[in-house]
Image 1 (cartoon, rainbow, N blue to C red):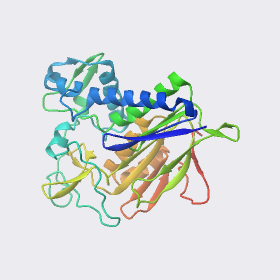
Image 2: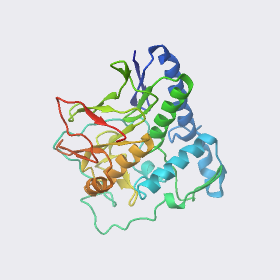
Image 3: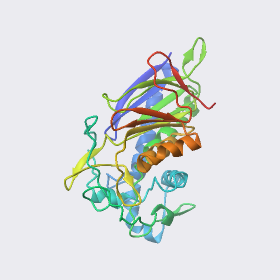
Length: 327
């Protein structure tokens, strides 16, 4: 028998499902412990995090813990996977935009696209803007030694939540043996068997929807698969008169133009799903053809709330369950 729990983490909803209801309390404790370990290792919003304490000395190379090393390895993997669309070196840019703890969701009405922030901070997109040297390519991680140039500041927010979901799901299954689904603010990972269906394990039933007013879709997610949704409608605020959000275009250090309300991706790991969904927001219209040519399963929702799919993602339907699988 399945069991579920919900709570708040990082200002977002966390949820947990296990296939054995007797395991729920221990499973939730394991997930909370992973989240706490990740937060202590890399939070940009607490002075006692390992990242914040070590950051002033990173130009000379610092020795990092196993957790921070893992988080950096996955962040750099996401950068390589997306050709730098996901970049862990944007901490100074986020600080300059006023991104602070407590910024959560300020929905933008459907059909009313926000005024995009641009490389120079005002007006329409500036074609003359010159892209910067990718910061992530200047970071080195040699064993336990992390070196970050003095002019860069780390922010692992684009990947750490997804890594936490992957780690938490794996830990629960390894310790308890039950099937598990962990969702941390839209980053969802699974491990072990799915819930019982006709006396044998089946897929997890997942509702794909960013905000309550957005189009929804219920899919059946095969065990061992992950989902991530990147949204330009959450974590919004006003900076210097411009409506901004937290997904930056690393070329300019400014919020990517919000051509997509949200992008949801399925992948073998939550880190990969999140990397691709974030990169899709950064690339804008070009992301759709990229995903289609690479066969990446994804669901795009545009400014008007219209949906489009790539890579075998099932069509929206109210009458049939759709399945995203390894197949």
